[in-house]
Amino acid sequence: MDFGDIYVSGPTIFKGDSIIDENTEIDYHQNVSLAYTYNIPNNISITAGDTMDLRIPENTLIASSFSYDIVADDGTLIMTISGDALSNTATATFGPYYELHKANRQGEILFYARGSTMMENEEWVMNKVGWNSFDNTSAVWNIIINPDSKYITNVILTDILGEMQELNSGFLIQAELGTYDKKTQYFQALEPIDPSKISSTDVGFVIDLGTLNNAVSLTYVSNKLSDKNLPYRNKAILQADGDGDPVVIEAETPGIGGGGSGSGDPGESTSETIDTSSGESSTTEKDSEETTSETIDTSSTESSSEEIATTSDTTTESIEESIASSTNESNTSSQESISSSDSVIVAELEEKSSNKLPKTGYLKSMIALTGYGLIFISIALFLIKKKNQDNNKR
Image 1 (cartoon, rainbow, N blue to C red):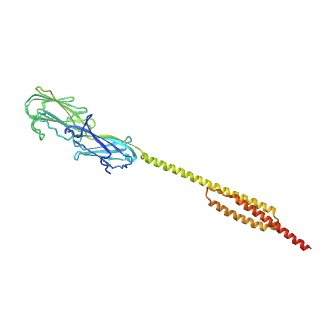
Image 2 (cartoon, rainbow, N blue to C red):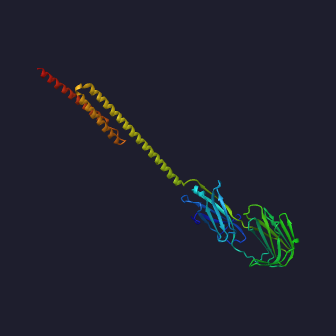
């Protein structure tokens, strides 16, 4: 998904430590830096391959196409920053880092650019520019002197290389006399300059040009000894007869690529964490209720069964002791009836809700009444039988 630039702030244009407004013209040969910040809301899902657009101000250009990575401390790719010089566009492509770090996602992006305006100065006497070699291992420098082909005497050029550079011994300094067109910026060579006029130094070279009435073009190469993507600087000093001060120009190669940082917290956003915690708490409470319910059901059923069984046994023993042998069949029938009643009551208790205790007192009363009834019937039968026996004796 392309998020455009909705989560990106900036850019801020820096020339060294100074901030330049987007409405200010910047010279084509001036290096600048573009700084961006980004902040992605917690509720936005980021997948590796998603992109953000990095807007390029109208007063700047990407000097050379580039691509570099911003990685976390553990080596995980946060994003890849790429710039295209032909279309003058830049893009941030997300890596997998923000798939795992989904909260507080923010960072900074910084890369090099150059001005977009060709400044015209009709009165300039010397100009110097630098650019990167095709393989970016060297810096290529060009100096134009006396573009209007004026008559100048005792002309001496001193060139001083910046830090972490050395002259490329395999590339001779191309020094030529000729004409120069300021409008087209084209130098037409007429003749080479005598190499004996060029003297090397520990930090560059010196050329004694003597008397001039032509334009001069000097081109040479220095090897980069440090980070190849950084800007490399160079200084040229032009001295000649006259009342003016020496002309001093400092030039630098365009920086390539840039840097940045990114951060994020693991896991989901704060709101999502709260929801998850509440769900777990509710589940725990529910489980607790279910456990309590099971305990009540089990204890109630076991207690009821034991009480019923005990009551039944006690009643049966009492009846057997009180009634004579003539009432055994009736007693047995009564026991079977009581046993059947026990089964029905147990079944009814198992169907009761766990929050209702069984009414065992009602069962005890019924058993007692039944026992008394049987005793009364047995006594009555015994008296009737004895009366009949007495009548027979008479």
